[in-house]
Length: 609
Image (cartoon, rainbow, N blue to C red; front, top):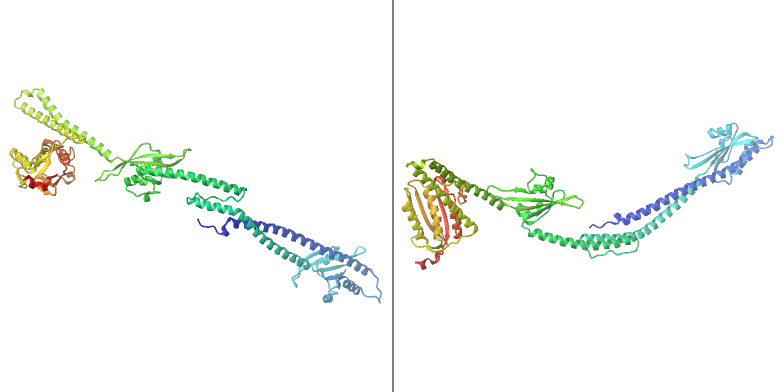
């Protein structure tokens, strides 16, 4: 897990919040304190000046009421003297002007502005003081100096009459200068307080974040499967209780993990040794587990199908949705058969549900029923073929017997023919039943071969001689056999039945004037026997099926010739029982060759000679 940087850690957030809270509190205190201080300083400044102006007003009022002779000083001179005395030691007064009733300046405390004496004042506050006796004060910034000044305009009363006005300009900037000094002190104190707060906040935060960091390390260790590590308990507070609870949780997780691992191994072992395929999905129908048999059945790899939808994996998109599979009660047949290879699976579905009834997934169990389906199909085909093969002669016999019963037995020309057909069909059914009984013995392994050492060349020649002597058609036999004996261990009766069946088929399907060839070749420790004819041949698509039970290339012609469709099937069973192999090749219109092999100990031929 990536380590959390200091500036992204909870410790930094805790310190930052703590500092911001202190800063916010100090800011509120500073604003309140500075505003109060500013108000107090301004009020004191204004009160001080107003008190001086009251005294100045009194002196000026007395001076204006005096009667003057020619020898006494003028009013302007007396007023100028009073102003100089009043403002001599007043550093916070910039200028004091005295205005008479005619709105003219008759005195000023500023030597540089004495040229203004005798000029008219245009300020509105002066006009209001002279006309209405109003006292007016205001504060503004002097455009020339850029400093704040306080202006007080006060009327001069004498016997309740306005005799003039006082226009005072006070230097209130000194008040704000003092406030700026106080702000600097407050700012420095705030910086120092914040620095100390940050240090104390880090120390305090570490007492909280240290156990949290320890628990984080423990959580990382738990994620890696390490349950041996314990969280250190630093105290008995809430964090200490959390650490104790975390340690208890670790212990329980260790026990639960051990139980889960044991169950997982059991489940893995069960799934691995199951012959059936098992697929598990999540609640959205995506594959989360598939065992090896299921992978082999579907010819997929476990890595590629994880997270793949189950309906896509089973090729059911066209017929089913995942919700349909959740509600499916019956088995679903999955037919993956091709032209060359049958392959059928049966899928059973089971829903995984929680105790609340919420669907948590789906379990699919796959069974390979290819052989079952093949056996069932062969069984149905076998029953159909047997029924058909028995029904045909029985129908013929019933027809002829009904004719005989109706009086045909009295006709000397018809009766023998009818009886002959009935006898032929009866013998055909007997052969069919005998062949079926023989095949039944092969299926149940209830037959025994009576084997003995035999010179196969002599044995084969005798069978060929018998057919050559009894043939009723113009068919030539050609033999390509060794002139020395080849000994094999065979059941002569059973092998005679095989060769008789193959030669009979060759004679049946050979045209008049045709050729039947017989050949024996040595191949290692086996001999290969072949019997060829020049008949109609067998289509390529039917060549591999001629050894199946009841299979006929041309059913009508085979039945007409009296065949049961079981001869080559019996031949295959007998050759296989002898440890050999049988097959056929054919070209349509040119003929067919049937091959079979038999094991032989060719190294001992000299001893038999």
